[in-house]
Length: 216
Image (cartoon, rainbow, N blue to C red; front, side):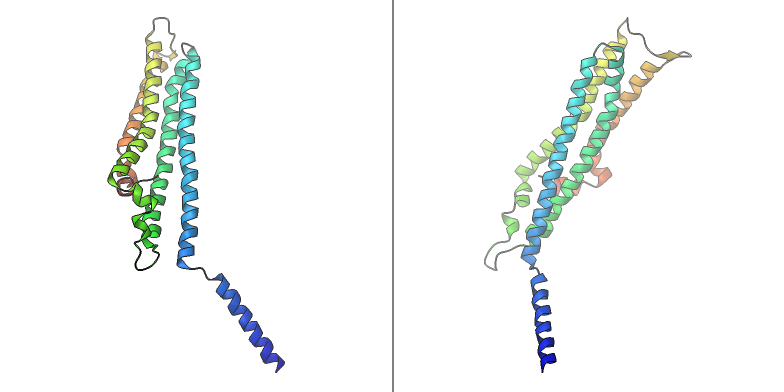
């Protein structure tokens, strides 16, 4: 019967296509791992770009040292630095979450066979999570963050020496010295930058990802 044969062939074709669409758990985890590692690499590049931008701006403002505009650029640098610091922390927070997902949901679920140890025992994130390597990672992360408030503090101090100079002419109106007001407001911004670093874990609930699972 031609119709039955045609139907049978059609069913076999559908079943064949359906089987080709099925992906094994190992293949899925492998693709997921590759995608997440690629995103981690991209975010690490972004992290270094943020630090580079901060240092470039920090160096550029000193080209105007001892000038009227230079004083305010040195003080306002703290605003740019705080913005970049927050971007750096947010980016690093996502890095920690990605690292945690890889360690728990991928490396912890892949094994070769019953006689072979889990990939988690030899995976990259597992290596990153050992105590010695984790301390190095945390130290490097702290070093990256501290660049922002320290550079702001240096620029602010240089601006302060310029403002205290006898020949400096501040901006004032109706008895208000806006140069001094700006000077102390930017100091407050610097204090916020330091607080953002030391209170980051509590604010973003980041302690579990930076202490238990270290970002690469």
